[in-house]
Length: 276
Image (cartoon, rainbow, N blue to C red; front, side, top):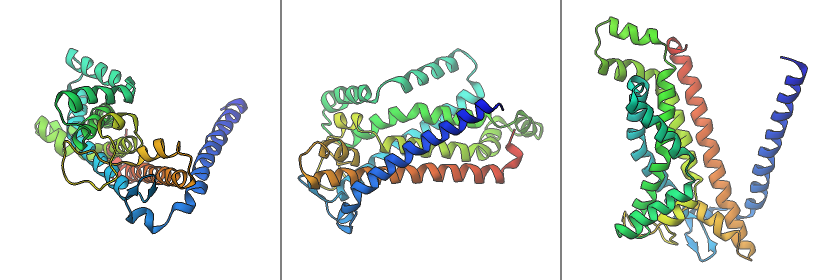
């Protein structure tokens, strides 16, 4: 590598590190006064109180979207990896790429028209979860496809050579090897869903109360709404609450990304035979 290339790499690293430290540091400094037990035990009261209801709502919708997106997206990824070379596979891959490029606020508006208005679900948990699921599906499918495609062809041939059928090769040989990378993709997808605001404004609404278990006709609170709304209020307490919500979201996303990286590295060490 030339000296110019090294200089460019070092500059890029320092620039990204400075931006990361600046953003995280600013969030921590402004959120610090609000980081008390009350933040986790009290529900939101107007523009003050705690974030118990918002934390619960973010967890409910992220987990719900993951439970819906994971089986569909992983199945689609397996199909694209094993049989996605024909016209149907190319079309599915193209539609997946198009879906990634659609702004999340457009998905939220479509969810608003179809579920909130047409189906009469009103602002609800189900409308928010389904909208997030649609947004996550292409990420899960493509990460699964890449994870499966990275397994050497010799592993497949060995499975077939031993007399295993396609189902056994996929489920018992390929999937265990690709599982760490697939799980990493799922962690990234959950991190993405935790940070979304626009699609939830149109579908989940907002609630100052804890979730009552109803999937339709009841709105739910979530952390990104607090960030988006409370920061515009002319009160110090609302600003601290917004930064506290940003701190929780940033911390949650960092934990998920680090967990995904750790799982991937650990899996690659254990499944060394699957590395190309």
